[in-house]
Image (cartoon, rainbow, N blue to C red; front, side, top):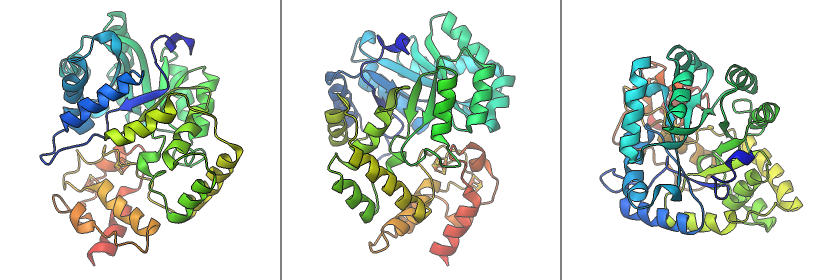
Length: 371
Ligand code: SF4
Ligand code: SF4
């Protein structure tokens, strides 16, 4: 892990998957530039993007807000090779060059094989993706190679055994998913320990799910007197010794300022906060929420243009806040298909990193909101 210590400043990353958009659906560059300036001024330096984030707009925002405004040595930039962005081996190098150009750089500090799971591993293997990124590393166009991962500990063990050259692995890790059967964060972390790999952590607040909590859970965390829900969730991850970077998908300056305040020097949580986390975990599990993180990987390929994460947010808000007027189903489906428009093609389930039974959940939503 020491290998990265000179490169990475702090453990707090600027994730560019969830960005503030303006009324036209474009990244709000004014807001983004201000966030970039504040983040760098606070002494951090790690930015994370992928070609699929906002259909390429995240990369371009990074060029406009970061790479064209700061010298290359001021920041560390991670990009990813996503299986849905190429069909065959010959597509990979042109895609990589497109990513460099979009970001306005001539190398990436980290390049990750994106969202590896059993469903796409064969494609990455058949297209020699692992060999190609090693070649890019030899050419200096990539400084470090790794993968982001969304499957079981057993499968992670297999991939790392077959690809010991991967230097770092990005996994989902937060206090709710430690032993969640679909995520198994702790099991994955244990496999990283076995293979002596550092961890980049995504979804530390589970797509906002550990911030927008039901009242009882919120009250329990407040009673621990050890910070806001976001702070407690992020410091919980920061305590894990294998973690070298925690990605936070902030989309406004206020969120960034709040996070900077405690992530500059994240303190260990108190025993009382750990007790509260344990209780809150049980409270949230009892609600049986849809475990959607809002990543939107499923939406691009949906032929019926269903706002899948929006529909799931309606379901979850209805469970978490039964006494609040949260029925915004009409609003989230106004620019696309409704849950009942699903033709059950299954594309979304192949790509969902949380392995959700999307078709079945949409049927339930249609019954609930459209009948
Ligand atoms: S299964 Fe339904 S929701 Fe999923 S991609 Fe196909 S049409 Fe869209
Ligand atoms: S349903 Fe799955 S792929 Fe779609 S936004 Fe939620 S977690 Fe992401």
